[in-house]
Structure formats: structure tokens, C-alpha cells
Length: 167
Picture 1: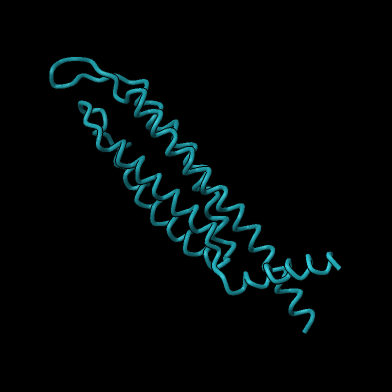
Picture 2: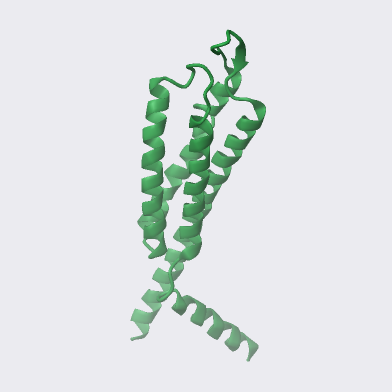
């Protein structure tokens, strides 16, 4: 008897997925956007000589804007159990880890001359640690969002197939 109650509860949870949004995947993607915005602000508010006035920073700004737009699209699409959006989150999540080695690592290792003539480190230890945390957690949120979205889409697809079969 207990097994039947467990199976009924499991069926009800799967059936509710037809009417409820996939909020977990969506919220994780939104958290990734917020953390990326914090990274964005932390990097671009720095005013250390002319180190950041390069084409690399221009490309980074454009990428950040595209990242936020596409990940918002991922959040909205995964909310409706569209598995394609969950797969789209994977490369963006991986790219957050790759980005650690593009600007933060190089800026942390670099020094530049400021207006007073002093040579200073471009990105201090505290800022470097902070932006690393932003990127790592943002990337992890996107990868977890993708995994949850793919799993939930599979469960719902299988459930809908069983419903169609039983009709």
C-alpha cells in the first residue's frame, strides 16, 4: 500500500510540471546574470592608469552585454521546459570559467604607471578574489541551471509520452 501512495505522489509531482514553470533553472540563470553584472561593475569601475583602455576591454564590454541578453533568454526559455535553452546555457557557463584567465588573471599580474608616476598593481588581491568568485559562481549557476533544465525536460517529456500512450 505504501508503494502505491509513493507512486501516486510521484505521478502527481510529474503531472504538476505541465502547469508549473521551471523556476529553479530560470532563477539560477538570473543569479548568473546578477553575478556577471557585479563582475562587470567591479572591473570597469577600476581607474588604474590607462591599462583598461584597450580593444580587449571593448570586446569584453560587448561580450558582457551579449552574455546578459542571451542568458536572460536562457532564463525565460528554460522556464517553459524548452531543452534547447538549457543546452545554450552550457557554453555560457563554461565561458565564465575561461574568462577568469582573460582579464582578471592578467590584470592581477600586471602593473601600470599612474598619474603620480607610481607603479601600482592593476588589480589588487581583494578585487581579484571578488571577481574570481563572481565568475566561478556565475558559471556554476549556469551549468547547474542547464543540468536541472535538461533533467526536468526529460522527466516531463517522458511523462507526456506516458500520458499519450495511456489515452
